[in-house]
Image (cartoon, rainbow, N blue to C red; front, side, top):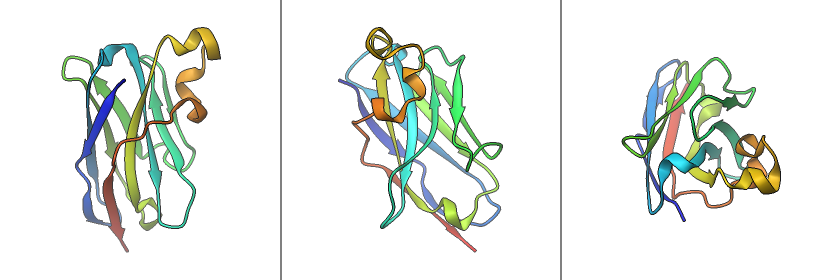
Amino acid sequence: QLQTVESGGGLVQAGGSLSLSCAASGDTFANYAMAWSRQAPGKEREFVAAISWSGRNIYYAGSVQGRFTISRDNARDTVYLQMNSLKPEDTADYSCAGVPYSREYRSGPNYWRDEQEYDDWGQGTQVTVSS
């Protein structure tokens, strides 16, 4: 089972940038598709971005498309979320999670971008965007 620890959150003005990191441990990171989600107080969790185990396939929610970039470094067991042009509505607690590639045999080739496949989100890192 993969464990994750997020970092890099903070307070930033609208229009600014932040870079989040998610360090993984407990299993072979390169075998996992990874994803970021966020949850604001009183709101449902929102699936933000996902990246396949190889890094060749990437998904973004429409609300962050063109502003956020997900990437991974399998040598460092880390997945990143670069957030640019931040808006007050991006304020939330951001978490990451992984799904092993073996899930494809059960759930099909698009498992890596299916938010229902991710259920072990980390503690999160708080991002606050001021207007």
